Image 1 (cartoon, rainbow, N blue to C red):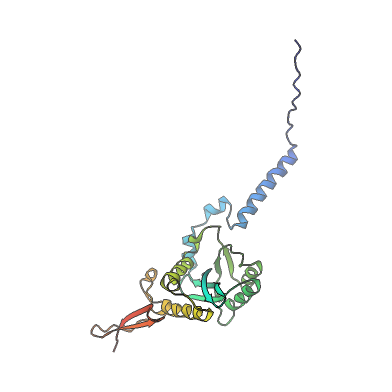
Image 2: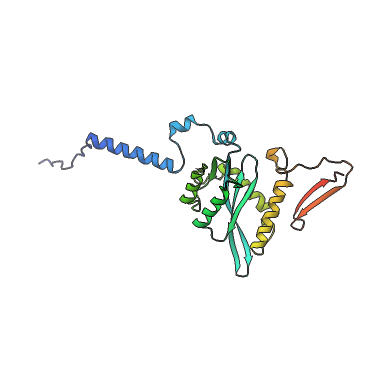
Length: 245
């Protein structure tokens, strides 16, 4: 009985130079993928402190940016508006930068100019701006920030908790104001946002800051004074205080 020859070929290992090249390409691709998502290599991550510590160490020079959307009734039906805002994480002061139906690259460049204005730009003196991966934050927009000395901090995907102060403001303005009205046109929406910001800054206590008001201080309370109410948006937002007289 004859023996069948084994015709299977044995794979030869790659030459040593090609092995080194393949290993280098793999390392480079891994490092490039991590850097695209703002993640440092493992040895660097171990030497760095936590995100919460980073935020606390840079209060006063770091801000968070985000969008929220609002459905507005118009003569042509419901129209979705995008509202862009920035929050100073140290003081919790919020500025609504702008709102638009169809924001694009040109609109974002103008918003960057407004934010970086040398006289009254909201980002004047800031060093970091927290952003997510929304495509509206175009490369040109980020380049304008860097040119002005503001470093964009791009968060990993699906991590809204890392921009918690901006997310908390969205929850506040929607639950306390915008979800309780039907904006009848852009003018009505702008008025509602302006009234809420006035309430948010000067009439609403903030638990994270020991229940203080962000702007202004209440007059010394007179225990015998009458309780007064200041209302906005026809009584939807209210501020109660005693007559100081």
